[in-house]
Length: 195
Image 1: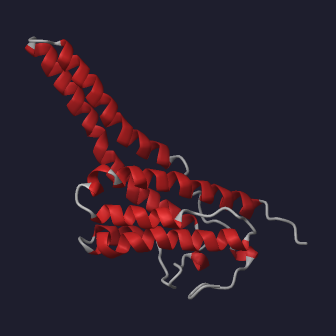
Image 2 (image 1 turned 45 degrees about the vertical axis):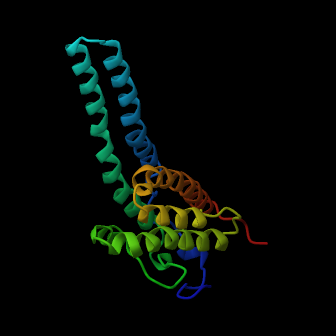
Image 3 (image 1 turned 90 degrees about the vertical axis):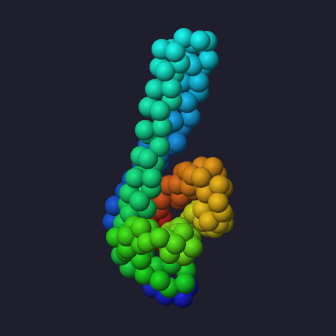
């Protein structure tokens, strides 16, 4: 075991939740729908060549689409909480030995500067460490994307990149991590027979 990790015990490795596997699809919709509505609104505005009512309708469609964008930022903390909650309590430990509760994972996300420069690294890379430790203990070769977690955290710090690229990388991270979570859930329900 790594620093701070408890020795793996399959009897204690039962998940304590599902990890909200459908949430990533709502996060994807919250990113894609504003873009789709903006394109449709732009087309409507362009077709209204000189007609102010049609152009105004196009503008309303564009603005209506952007109402979905804040939903993404509401769903991220929910996804983080559900992800940490699904891990067995004894294994909610990062690779550096820091214990993280689901409430702590989300609560510290709301501390300015601390969240971007430190806590995002802990909750994303540390989650990969904890999940990968469980997957390794259950005999799986599948791993959560720790390198991608690092890239996402770095992109979240860089101005403009944090607005344009980081949300897309967070989505990719959520999809890849949910694949590892699915593997963990399957293996914990159907453990491999002892040899």
